[in-house]
Length: 346
View 1 (cartoon, rainbow, N blue to C red):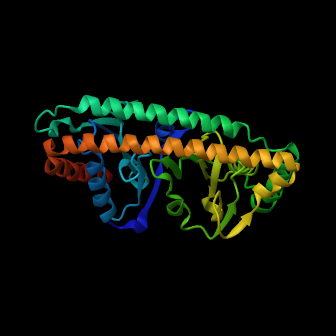
View 2 (spheres, one colour):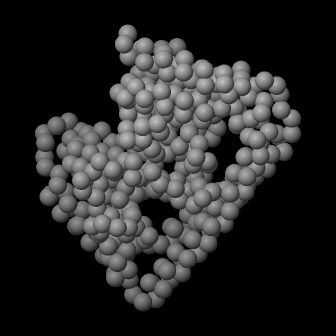
View 3 (spheres, rainbow, N blue to C red):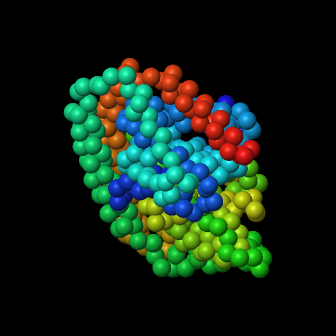
């Protein structure tokens, strides 16, 4: 595996509003010419298939984008090979994908053929897993309500907006080009392990990274105007939404300028939290911090439910796996990797 030519991210997120999928948006926003959609139940080998295809194409020298699962951050939900304009995605729930152009651009790959025999006793585990997810999303909704109570003073929002204006004037020269392409994907996910991030695979080639304090949720006042100005002036960009509040930008990457703004610690920093807190009175600051602590408790409860769901899912897969022909799946993956490469030469 050549990790040097891979990017990793998520297209699904466990958010305050439930599961959020960017899969269809991702497919429609690019110039993809071939999409293979995997179908098959839990434990049937979808991630195994995806890894095998990714390894083969990576070994041939192609940059592969790995799309990870927010439910199991060790498992793949898809791969994309931009140079080949080809992607392979898991099309099962909760990120259901169906063909837009069946037989022309989009094709099914059915892995159910590799079940060697039926497996019993799965219903109770699957129902239990869904119940745990339902509880997790209840806690996430509570955390979202608390987040909504974290009002940033208008004075602070305006100050951050002025800082954004200065960055726009300094960094984003008018190009005269048509509007740039905005790509949205999750660099981070809230999982049974808490927050898992692949941000480093997206920013590793950048020469300038500006870190943002963002516990107070103030980054949107900086990133949204910069993103809009960049696109309007002809720059392609990557916007990484918050996995908990997907309507809010969390990171912004401008590849042409080798510049990234990331909600993370370290390096050159903009102290957005301090800007927000300095605009509050003492009582407001105390209330703000107490609300942050309550939100953290709700997130910990959600994480515990996601962990319990993962344990049930692991048990379900352990029952299914012995009845799956993984050798056949790897052979099929090699066949499809060869097909993808042959289409390039055609």
